[in-house]
Length: 333
Ligand SMILES: Cc1cc2nc3c(=O)[nH]c(=O)nc-3n(C[C@H](O)[C@H](O)[C@H](O)COP(=O)(O)OP(=O)(O)OC[C@H]3O[C@@H](n4cnc5c(N)ncnc54)[C@H](O)[C@@H]3O)c2cc1C
Image (cartoon, rainbow, N blue to C red; front, side, top):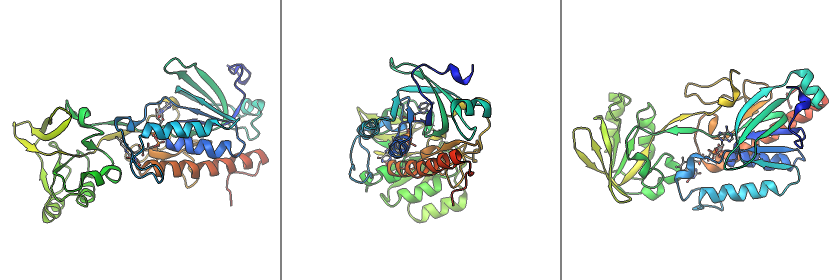
C-alpha cells in the first residue's frame, strides 16, 4: 500500500495519540490548542475501570474515573482539529522518508496507524507525523480466584490514591515482587495493623523483615488460597493450609505490562520492569514515537501525574513538529 491509499476522508494528521486516558487526553488538548490536527485512538479499557471513585485530582477529588475521562474527551472534541476514534490500535508502521514527504511531512518522518473499531465504531487509518503512546498498562493480579471481586473496593493497587480511606484498619499487602518492602513502609503511614503476604515468594529479605517487624508489620510467607468475604465485604485472607487471617482490605501489587503489540517487530527500548524508556523530551528509542503516562518509568502513578506528563510531552512534540518543518533538528534549546 502507498501513502496515497489512505482511508478516504482522513487527512494526514500531526500526532496520533494511542490511548484516551488522562495522559493521552491531556496531550491531545494541548496539541489541538496548538492548532494541530490530532487523533486520539482509544479502546476504552482503562485499568481504573475497577473503581468507582478516584482521589487526589485537584478540583475532582472523589469523582468517578470514567466521569473524568468523559469530561476530558468533551473538552478535547470541542476543537475543530480534534478527532476521537473508539478503536483498538493494531498497527503503527513507519513510512519510508519518500512516502512521508509525498504525504506532505516535511522532515521525512511519518507513520501509518491503523485501528479496529470497538463497540460498533468504524475502523480507522491515519497517516501521522508523530505518534504518542499513552496506552497505560495492563495488569495481572496474583492468581487468586476471588481477588478481582474485591479489587477497586476493598483491595487497591495505588497507595497514594486509596490509602487515606484505609486509615487505622486491619490491612493486607499482597505482593510477589521485590518492591513490597517499600510499599509496606508507605502503607504503615495509614495503619499500624498491616500484614505483608508474599504468597510463597521469597521477595522480602531477612533484614527488611526485621525492619518491618520493628514497626509492627508482620510478614506472612505462606501461600494464599484465596480472599474471603461476606457479600461485598472482604473479611480475610485464607492460606492454603486453611488458616484464615482476618483483614478488611488493603493493597495488592499487580504485575504490569506495557501493551505495545501494535509496534509489531519494531524494537523499542524498555527498562527492567518492561516499561517504555523515554528521553527527557518524552521520545522513545524509535524516532518520532513518544510515550507518556503510566506506561513510562517509574510506572503507575496517579491521574494528575499522567495528565501532567501528557501536557509536558505535548509541548516537546509541538516543538519537534515545528523544528522538523523548518529542518532545524530536534534539540529545542
Ligand atoms: C483500580 C485503580 C484505581 C485507581 N485510583 C486512582 C485514584 O483514586 N486516583 C489517582 O490519581 N489515580 C488512580 N489510579 C491510577 C490512574 O488510574 C492511572 O495512573 C492513570 O489512569 C494513568 O493514565 P494513563 O493515561 O497513562 O493510562 P490509562 O488511564 O490506563 O489510559 C490508557 C488508555 O489507553 C487505551 N489503550 C490501551 N491500548 C490501546 C490500543 N492498542 N489502542 C487504543 N487504545 C488503547 C486503554 O483502553 C485506556 O483507555 C487508579 C488505578 C487503578 C488500577
